[in-house]
Amino acid sequence: MSRPEAFAGLPDWAAWIAQDASGTWWAYEVQPQEYDSGWYENELGRYRQIGESEPNPDWRSTLKSVRKD
Image (cartoon, rainbow, N blue to C red; front, side, top):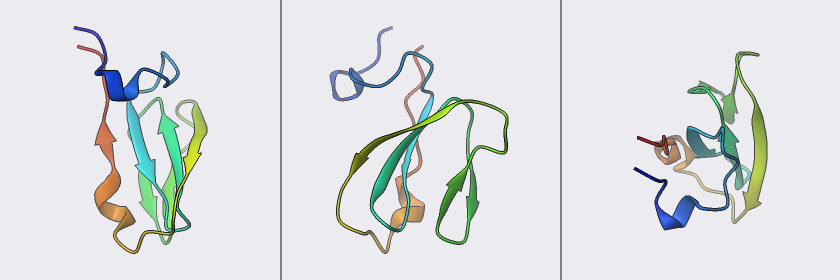
């Protein structure tokens, strides 16, 4: 199954997306770990900034799997 249309612009390797507290959106190759104001990849995979939006006080709820199945 292909990636949903909403995620068509993500890198092919992206399996997760998340927003940090500042509003920056990131794509991750492996599931990131939470830290005090965002996410980190723990040097296990690639990551790339994919967008910006308003700071989000509920950023912890933004981690989503976008895996290709």
